[in-house]
Amino acid sequence: MQKNSSSNIKSSELRKNIRIEVRKRRKSLDENFQTQAESSLNINFFQHINPAKNTAIGVYLSNDGELETNLLIQSLWDKNIAVFLPVIHPFNGKTLLFQRYEKNSTMTQNRYAILEPKLNCSEICPIDQLDFLLMPLVAFDEQGNRLGMGGGYYDRTLATYYNQGWTKPRLIGLAHDCQKVSQLPIEAWDVPLPEILTPTQYYQWG
Ligand SMILES: Nc1nc2c(c(=O)[nH]1)N(C=O)[C@@H](CNc1ccc(C(=O)N[C@@H](CCC(=O)O)C(=O)O)cc1)CN2
Ligand SMILES: Nc1ncnc2c1ncn2[C@@H]1O[C@H](COP(=O)(O)OP(=O)(O)OP(=O)(O)O)[C@@H](O)[C@H]1O
Image (tube, rainbow, N blue to C red; front, side, top):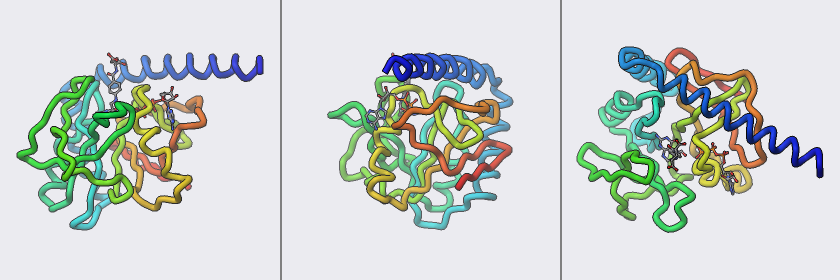
């Protein structure tokens, strides 16, 4: 008990420090670097993932220095791939819904000032009907463990992923190369990423 609780304190402290450090790192990337990274991601995505037409993909709108996804979203639209964005659940406030995002979608700011489509239940896609889910992250390690912003949104939303034996969506983390750390302290609820794409690398585990 003693040992367990003290190692948990250590783990959460470490996670907090890694979050602060890596968020600082990605936020300090300048505009030119971000533009180049966004363009490289677009090329790397179609080289390694290349989804078929008529597939459905969950993406995110960048925030806090995250790898920009605007160009990728444009390319997906051009290929008639349906794009969905995370919307914080209006009732429980703890999980994510994925709602269709089109050029003319009405947007609204969530509690973190991130744009999300204005809730329209008829445009929500059940998560296990998405073919791909491109996930934001703060840090990842050499085993594909993921550390997020600390809200637990993706972890809670995907909690049923393994125990219900879902085969979809394919989970792919998106990050700058500088967000890689050698080893993350993991928690029981963390959902590891089988694939991670950066502007220059494609990692695949398992
Ligand atoms: N682009 C993007 N969208 C996303 C996520 C994400 O990580 N990236 N999320 C992934 O889960 C969800 C939102 N989660 C978030 C959690 C914390 C903060 C954040 O900025 N926290 C502030 C404190 C804010 C406050 O409570 O006042 C901070 O830590 O500085 C942002 C988003 C859904 N949408
Ligand atoms: N499956 C779950 N069920 C209940 N609570 C959870 C679950 N997953 C995460 N949480 C809670 O969410 C909090 C934040 O978790 P964590 O620090 O792993 O978030 P994160 O992965 O960084 O964030 P996000 O997934 O939003 O990017 C934790 O304190 C944990 O208690």
